[in-house]
Structure formats: C-alpha cells, structure tokens
Length: 196
Ligand SMILES: *[C@@H]1O[C@H](CO)[C@@H](O)[C@H](O)[C@H]1NC(C)=O
Ligand SMILES: *[C@@H]1O[C@H](CO)[C@@H](O)[C@H](O)[C@H]1NC(C)=O
Ligand SMILES: *[C@@H]1O[C@H](CO)[C@@H](O)[C@H](O)[C@H]1NC(C)=O
Ligand SMILES: *[C@@H]1O[C@H](CO)[C@@H](O)[C@H](O)[C@H]1NC(C)=O
View (spheres, protein in one colour):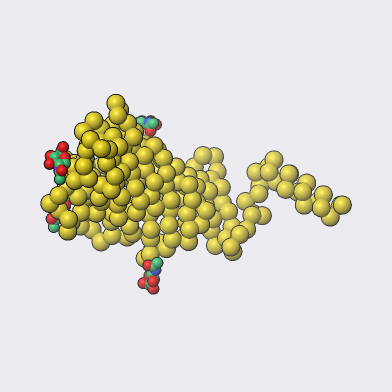
C-alpha cells in the first residue's frame, strides 16, 4: 500500500505546488507549462487563400465544395456566404508575401455559419515538413470575421508540436474581393512538450 500511496501523494503535492512539469514525460518528451500566463512558445505565420471563382483553377488553393440549394459552388453565396463549405490547401509563409517560399501548408476547411452575422467556423492543420519545423499544429473554432482579431483554439499537434495546446489569434491581413484573403496567425502555446 505504502508503495502506491507514496507516488500518489507526491503527485498530489506536485499538483498543489504546480511542480509537475519535471515529472511528466511521454514519447521522450517533457512537458513545459506556460508560467504566469506567458506562452511557452510563440510563432507567427501567414497563410494565403485563393478561392476558385470559375476562372482561376490553376491558381486557386481553395474550392467551395458545398453550397446551399439557393447558391452554387462557383461563387460564394449571398447573405454572409451562409451555408458555403470551403476546403483549402494554402501556402504558409513567414511574412505577408504570397510569393515567399512556403514553410508549410494550411489544410482543412471553413464554413460560413451565420445568416445574419458574417461569421465562419474553421478546422485546419498547419503541416510542416522542413528543416525548421516537422509535424502539425491543429486548430479549431469559431471565427467571427467582423472582429479585427479572433481567437481560435490550438487543440493539439504532432512532431515538433507534440500535444501542443494554446490559442491562435487570427487577423485578416489583406483581402481582394471574394478571391483572396491572407490571415496572420499569432500562435501562443501554453502547453509545450520538448525533447527531454
Ligand atoms: C453561381 O451563382 C452566381 C451568383 O448567384 C451566378 O452569377 C453564376 O452565374 C452561378 N454560376 C453557375 C455556374 O451556376
Ligand atoms: C518530409 O520531407 C522528407 C525529406 O525531404 C521526405 O523524405 C518525407 O517524405 C517528407 N514527409 C512528408 C510527410 O511529406
Ligand atoms: C475582438 O477583438 C478584440 C480586439 O481586437 C479582442 O479583444 C476580442 O477578444 C475579440 N473578440 C473575439 C470574440 O474574438
Ligand atoms: C493568383 O491569385 C492571386 C490572388 O488573387 C493573385 O494576386 C495572383 O496574381 C494570381 N497569380 C496568377 C499567376 O494568376
């Protein structure tokens, strides 16, 4: 009994004192929690979404794959694009230049889910395979587009971003009609796992 009770009380003690980080180890990685609300890691990227509009098939990185019965999959629907579902495979860059060499891809979907208010829901991953970063960061959440900045959840990650969690602050950095937009993504991780 004592053999069981001891680690348990040690765990309890370390939770109380918030000293658990040194004991948690999985996959050869050690957890680091953010201290005093400062992120344990911060990364800024941009991604570029070029929506197919019937004329730019070669250049497009996103396509409407679902639309309400009153609209079509070529042009975003009226009334806040409500009901449109878009899949994307967008380049991720370190700066705001569409033509910069991508460091990864943003892959996933968004759908417009507000009929009266212009708003969307995002679910996507940043997929990295470069010497700088390998692995993925997964994002999900509501994107109230009319707000200058929007926070969505970082719900997990793989590779260099093993089990990462935090918040990503999105800002629309540029847009051109309904064809192109660029988002600035300021990622603040509050749970980081690092090589032990
Ligand atoms: C799609 O809808 C737009 C806007 O309502 C319209 O201008 C366009 O002609 C439609 N395209 C097709 C292929 O139906
Ligand atoms: C990542 O890059 C390496 C080296 O360039 C390559 O061998 C590997 O297949 C790539 N992995 C993926 C998932 O693209
Ligand atoms: C809207 O933006 C403001 C400032 O840009 C920010 O403080 C607030 O958290 C944002 N609201 C949402 C719902 O993202
Ligand atoms: C691709 O689309 C973007 C956004 O509309 C535009 O800025 C760029 O010039 C286009 N590139 C080509 C080769 O058409």
